[in-house]
Structures are given as structure tokens and as C-alpha cells.
Image (tube, rainbow, N blue to C red; front, side, top):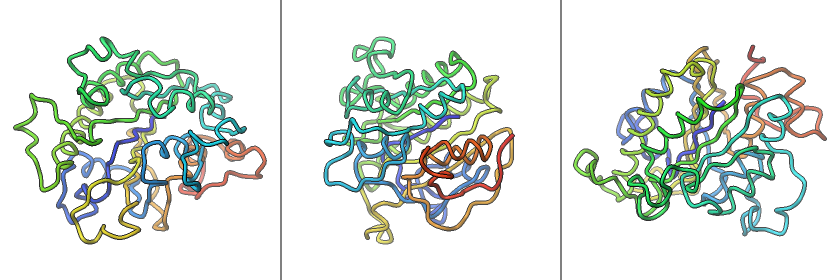
Length: 298
């Protein structure tokens, strides 16, 4: 199972939700092949709020993010712990400096066994792939991620958090003309990140684990806005959610809203049995989740 948590990849920028007018031709194409949720909303407005939502189902209910709050050491049961008990190798990848936003520490709290940051990337900040601001550009980092997945013990659960489409929205020099600026500074960066996703799936499709893998694509939050339809409270949280499994056909999406806080329970209803569903929150009789899929996967 692979989660691709894409920086600032708001619904406003894709074509599938905007009458074909967007900056993400690859994502638009992939969304027609998977289970795509049109009424999905981000947990918060900051990157630091995304990982707790995705890995532990924690909503952003406080003024300060959970990772830096007084509750950060409280007991919680995240996907790393739950899937680890089921025999999964678990990991998180983020191409920024180790320690950025406390992601490495939080990943460990949720039971993630391995964390890969800038320090683990070949050459680190001295690599030609370093963007000079945050970390490694998305294209080379997602290629590195694909290679690393091939070295994971199976079954594996791995999350990658991209970063190029974060302000100041850089594009590698060799792609400056290919991904020309749009009406907003972020548009060229979104085009580049969509290209990086395409190259990742091209590489992944050649790997033996590919057809056995559930891919979950979503964004951490929205960013710059131009379209009037998104310049409101709902629009400021509107992000895509896509489940894609190359080896099986997924059922149709439930049209009801699916805020990103239940991404932790979500894989319980896509990968295993009803008995496993109850493991997401051990104190509950079943997962605290929107039942997005009907029935277990084999």
C-alpha cells in the first residue's frame, strides 16, 4: 500500500474537477481509472496538519498543530502500528531536512518503522537534485522512492510526502521552458509535479510489486487561488482523493463528503477483513471511518 501525499495539490488545479481546464493531465487520466472522490476536503491549511490526519486519523481541532501541542506524547494508534502488527514493513519518505515539522518523530509515534529524509537521499543537500529551499525536487525524489519500494520487505505500507509545489514553487532549471508559468506562480510547479507523478507510475509499473499495490493519492492542503468557485470556505479546503489499484477494479465512489481525517481508517476497509477493520481504533467495535468501500479485498 502506497500513499502519495502531494504538496498543495488542490482540486482547483486539476482538470477532472474543472471541466478539463487544469494543469494535471496525468492525474486527470489516472483518476478515470481508479476510485475518485469529488467531495473530499483537506484536514487543515498547513502541511504540519496533514501527516497526523493521514497516518493517525487526527483532525485539526486546535489552534496549534498536534505535532507541536502538549498532546503530542499522548497514546495513539496509527497506521504504522496497526499494519505493522499485520506483518507490513512500514516507512515514510519526505525529501526535506530530517526533523522538518517533526515528521520523523511523529512517524515513529504512529509505529512507522523507517523514516527517509534528506539525510538518507544520496548526496543530501549537496545533491544536484536539491532545490535550494526545501529539499529534493519531486521527479528525482519519486524515482528514488520507487527504487526504495523495491527494497522493502513485502507486504509494505509506505507514504511519500512531496514538496516541490510548496512556496516558492520552484521548477528545475532544465524544465523551465517545458512547464511555463501559468496565471499563478504555483501553476508551473503543479505541472511539474504532475509530470513527476507520471514518471513515478511509469517506473513503478515495471516493478513486480506494482499490480499488488493500492495507491492512495491526496493533497495536504490547498494553496493559491484564482477560480471564484474556490474562493470560499469549502473551496479553501477542497482537495482530490484518488484510490488506484492496477490489479483490480475498485467500486464506485460514495458521493458524500470525505474529509481527509479518516485516511488512517480508510485502508482498513480496502485491504483486509472486517476483523482488521476494528483494529484502527482498538476501543471501538469498528473503525471510525466513512465506509468508502463495500466488502474486503482478497
